[in-house]
Image (tube, rainbow, N blue to C red):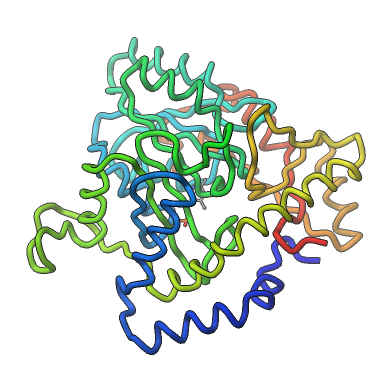
Length: 355
Ligand SMILES: *Cc1c(COP(=O)(O)O)cnc(C)c1O
């Protein structure tokens, strides 16, 4: 049994994907070919925003967003401690300071109550300028945006939605990728919508950010290729990856239905001793992971593996405990909920072809 069955997906889409790849090989526009722009239109339509800007990966999508928002040395950026490293890494990479926030016990997402406490704490300490929040749609469930948007507005902070895992989820019909000032996603093969290599995208309704992001991803390009108006990076989505994603995106709603069906089946057959994920009212998940909670994680993992069912742990180490962030001097008891989650969660197989 596979944890994520990319082979089954390829077998299902083989003809369509192969045809698309061959079309790119025929026209030869490997960088910023027509498929890239076609995909950006389709993605913006799907998410329901004005602009989609693709880039090389989900980490770059965050870095580019922070460049567009002008996040710099001396700024505090709030993010959950229970997330994938890239969320926090890109804050430090922008020379800003990550301020970690504890998790909500039920959703595993950033806790709005703790978020407001840490913002107030940072303001009263006075050494950093509170600038932005990065909320993460962990395991596919959108963060509590109604609350987080209210807090961002109250303290005049920018909001980035890290929807690397969230693509496909929604709150009251509003899709992941449409929250905050800027949202980002990843097309890493194992994400809900993945390509066959690295890929990422940025979503925004803001024309000014979109224009900057289109320039930043190509060396700060101005009116033409050899006119550079700002310091940027080289972060483009390969045309071949865009071609693959166009076919995968067409199939995505069907795969998402299958993921939801698999999640429903899990909720009916798994033992009651496991704490199963629950969707808050009005929320849907992309089920990037189906993550359960148990105080007997090692035992459960062994039992499942004995039945040839792969189980993974995302994430055994919170950001505040990562060696790379020791310089921030957090202690383990600063984040009681996240710490407990890191010891108790594990994820079961989940993909659009699960039987
Ligand atoms: C995967 C992931 C990223 C980074 O995406 P890459 O495409 O691997 O660079 C960022 N944030 C979260 C929450 C992720 O899961």
